[in-house]
Image (tube, rainbow, N blue to C red; front, top):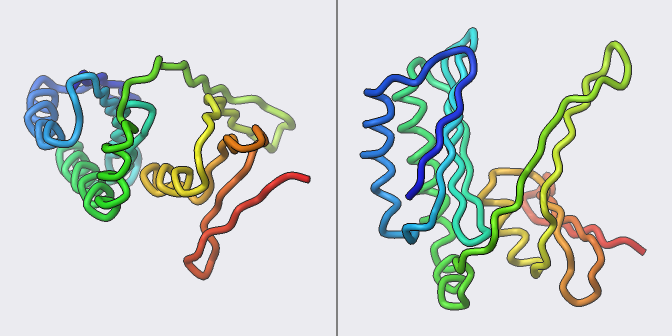
Amino acid sequence: MKITYATKRQEVTSEFVASAERKLKKFDRFFKDDACALIKTDKKKNGESVELTISCGGTLYRSEKRADTMMNALDETIEAILRQIRKNKTRLERKLKEGAFVPVPDEEVSEEIVEEAPEFRVRTKSFPVKPMTTEDAILQMLLLEHDFFLFRNPDNGALNLVYRRADGDYGLIVPD
Protein backbone atom coordinates (compact mmCIF):
# COMPACT_ATOMS: atom_id res chain seq x y z
CA MET A 1 0.00 0.00 0.00
CA LYS A 2 1.33 3.41 -0.96
CA ILE A 3 1.10 5.88 1.95
CA THR A 4 1.08 9.67 1.57
CA TYR A 5 1.22 12.16 4.45
CA ALA A 6 -0.19 15.69 4.59
CA THR A 7 0.21 17.88 7.65
CA LYS A 8 -1.18 21.14 8.90
CA ARG A 9 0.31 23.20 11.75
CA GLN A 10 2.73 20.41 12.75
CA GLU A 11 5.37 18.02 11.48
CA VAL A 12 5.07 14.26 11.18
CA THR A 13 7.77 12.47 13.15
CA SER A 14 9.65 9.44 11.88
CA GLU A 15 8.19 7.51 14.84
CA PHE A 16 4.66 8.34 13.66
CA VAL A 17 5.50 7.31 10.08
CA ALA A 18 6.96 3.97 11.21
CA SER A 19 3.97 3.32 13.46
CA ALA A 20 1.47 4.24 10.72
CA GLU A 21 3.16 1.93 8.20
CA ARG A 22 3.19 -0.93 10.72
CA LYS A 23 -0.49 -0.42 11.67
CA LEU A 24 -1.68 -0.07 8.08
CA LYS A 25 -0.34 -3.56 7.34
CA LYS A 26 -3.63 -4.74 8.91
CA PHE A 27 -5.31 -3.73 5.66
CA ASP A 28 -3.07 -5.87 3.44
CA ARG A 29 -5.53 -8.76 3.73
CA PHE A 30 -8.32 -6.56 2.31
CA PHE A 31 -6.56 -4.59 -0.41
CA LYS A 32 -4.14 -5.31 -3.20
CA ASP A 33 -0.74 -3.63 -3.43
CA ASP A 34 -2.16 -0.86 -5.64
CA ALA A 35 -4.18 0.65 -2.76
CA CYS A 36 -3.29 4.19 -1.70
CA ALA A 37 -3.60 5.66 1.79
CA LEU A 38 -3.62 9.37 2.58
CA ILE A 39 -3.00 10.38 6.18
CA LYS A 40 -3.79 14.02 6.99
CA THR A 41 -2.81 15.35 10.41
CA ASP A 42 -3.79 18.64 12.01
CA LYS A 43 -3.04 20.18 15.37
CA LYS A 44 -6.06 21.94 16.88
CA LYS A 45 -6.85 23.69 20.15
CA ASN A 46 -8.61 20.67 21.65
CA GLY A 47 -6.16 18.00 20.47
CA GLU A 48 -4.84 16.53 17.27
CA SER A 49 -6.84 15.10 14.41
CA VAL A 50 -5.96 12.41 11.91
CA GLU A 51 -7.90 11.72 8.72
CA LEU A 52 -7.25 8.43 6.96
CA THR A 53 -8.50 7.86 3.42
CA ILE A 54 -7.81 4.58 1.63
CA SER A 55 -8.50 4.38 -2.09
CA CYS A 56 -8.61 1.09 -3.94
CA GLY A 57 -10.20 0.45 -7.30
CA GLY A 58 -12.42 3.52 -7.18
CA THR A 59 -13.80 2.75 -3.70
CA LEU A 60 -12.91 5.11 -0.87
CA TYR A 61 -12.72 4.30 2.83
CA ARG A 62 -12.48 7.35 5.07
CA SER A 63 -12.39 8.19 8.75
CA GLU A 64 -11.41 11.26 10.72
CA LYS A 65 -10.88 11.22 14.48
CA ARG A 66 -9.66 13.67 17.09
CA ALA A 67 -7.64 12.67 20.19
CA ASP A 68 -5.06 14.03 22.60
CA THR A 69 -2.14 12.66 20.52
CA MET A 70 -1.61 11.84 16.86
CA MET A 71 -0.94 8.18 17.72
CA ASN A 72 -4.25 7.80 19.55
CA ALA A 73 -6.12 9.53 16.73
CA LEU A 74 -4.43 7.23 14.19
CA ASP A 75 -5.44 4.16 16.20
CA GLU A 76 -9.05 5.38 16.30
CA THR A 77 -9.17 6.05 12.53
CA ILE A 78 -7.76 2.60 11.75
CA GLU A 79 -10.29 0.94 14.05
CA ALA A 80 -13.12 2.98 12.48
CA ILE A 81 -12.21 1.82 8.96
CA LEU A 82 -11.87 -1.80 10.15
CA ARG A 83 -15.38 -1.47 11.67
CA GLN A 84 -16.69 -0.10 8.36
CA ILE A 85 -15.23 -3.07 6.49
CA ARG A 86 -16.62 -5.58 9.02
CA LYS A 87 -20.04 -3.88 9.05
CA ASN A 88 -20.28 -3.96 5.27
CA LYS A 89 -18.49 -7.29 4.86
CA THR A 90 -21.18 -9.07 2.84
CA ARG A 91 -21.64 -6.13 0.48
CA LEU A 92 -17.89 -5.76 0.01
CA GLU A 93 -17.38 -9.49 -0.57
CA ARG A 94 -19.97 -9.40 -3.32
CA LYS A 95 -18.24 -6.37 -4.80
CA LEU A 96 -14.94 -8.23 -4.70
CA LYS A 97 -16.45 -11.05 -6.72
CA GLU A 98 -17.89 -8.56 -9.19
CA GLY A 99 -14.46 -6.96 -9.63
CA ALA A 100 -15.21 -3.76 -7.71
CA PHE A 101 -11.60 -3.39 -6.65
CA VAL A 102 -10.23 -3.37 -10.19
CA PRO A 103 -7.96 -0.33 -10.43
CA VAL A 104 -9.33 2.70 -12.23
CA PRO A 105 -7.26 5.68 -13.33
CA ASP A 106 -6.86 8.19 -10.52
CA GLU A 107 -8.68 11.42 -11.14
CA GLU A 108 -7.65 14.53 -9.33
CA VAL A 109 -9.86 15.92 -6.58
CA SER A 110 -9.49 19.65 -6.23
CA GLU A 111 -10.58 21.79 -3.35
CA GLU A 112 -10.65 25.55 -2.96
CA ILE A 113 -12.11 28.14 -0.64
CA VAL A 114 -14.10 30.90 -2.28
CA GLU A 115 -15.26 33.96 -0.40
CA GLU A 116 -18.78 34.89 -1.54
CA ALA A 117 -19.39 37.58 1.04
CA PRO A 118 -17.32 38.85 3.95
CA GLU A 119 -19.26 36.74 6.47
CA PHE A 120 -19.59 33.56 4.34
CA ARG A 121 -16.86 31.12 3.39
CA VAL A 122 -17.90 28.53 0.84
CA ARG A 123 -15.76 25.44 0.50
CA THR A 124 -15.92 24.06 -3.03
CA LYS A 125 -14.95 20.48 -3.75
CA SER A 126 -14.97 18.79 -7.13
CA PHE A 127 -14.71 15.06 -7.72
CA PRO A 128 -15.44 12.59 -10.51
CA VAL A 129 -19.07 11.40 -10.53
CA LYS A 130 -19.07 7.73 -11.48
CA PRO A 131 -21.93 5.59 -12.75
CA MET A 132 -23.11 3.16 -10.06
CA THR A 133 -26.24 1.57 -8.72
CA THR A 134 -28.15 3.05 -5.80
CA GLU A 135 -26.94 0.22 -3.54
CA ASP A 136 -23.31 0.88 -4.50
CA ALA A 137 -23.79 4.61 -3.84
CA ILE A 138 -25.21 3.89 -0.36
CA LEU A 139 -22.24 1.63 0.38
CA GLN A 140 -19.80 4.32 -0.78
CA MET A 141 -21.63 6.91 1.37
CA LEU A 142 -21.31 4.62 4.42
CA LEU A 143 -17.62 3.98 3.78
CA LEU A 144 -16.94 7.72 3.53
CA GLU A 145 -18.98 8.41 6.70
CA HIS A 146 -20.98 11.08 4.85
CA ASP A 147 -24.69 11.85 5.09
CA PHE A 148 -25.17 12.07 1.31
CA PHE A 149 -23.51 10.92 -1.90
CA LEU A 150 -23.86 12.16 -5.49
CA PHE A 151 -23.62 9.57 -8.29
CA ARG A 152 -24.59 9.00 -11.92
CA ASN A 153 -27.40 6.53 -12.62
CA PRO A 154 -26.09 4.00 -15.17
CA ASP A 155 -29.59 3.41 -16.60
CA ASN A 156 -30.33 6.97 -17.75
CA GLY A 157 -27.09 8.88 -17.10
CA ALA A 158 -28.79 11.37 -14.75
CA LEU A 159 -27.21 12.63 -11.55
CA ASN A 160 -28.87 11.16 -8.45
CA LEU A 161 -28.29 11.75 -4.76
CA VAL A 162 -28.67 9.27 -1.90
CA TYR A 163 -28.88 10.53 1.68
CA ARG A 164 -29.34 9.23 5.19
CA ARG A 165 -32.71 10.12 6.69
CA ALA A 166 -33.25 11.07 10.34
CA ASP A 167 -35.11 7.79 10.94
CA GLY A 168 -32.04 5.77 9.83
CA ASP A 169 -33.37 4.83 6.40
CA TYR A 170 -32.01 6.15 3.11
CA GLY A 171 -33.50 8.51 0.58
CA LEU A 172 -32.93 8.95 -3.14
CA ILE A 173 -33.30 12.23 -5.00
CA VAL A 174 -33.92 11.85 -8.74
CA PRO A 175 -34.20 14.97 -10.99
CA ASP A 176 -37.24 15.40 -13.26
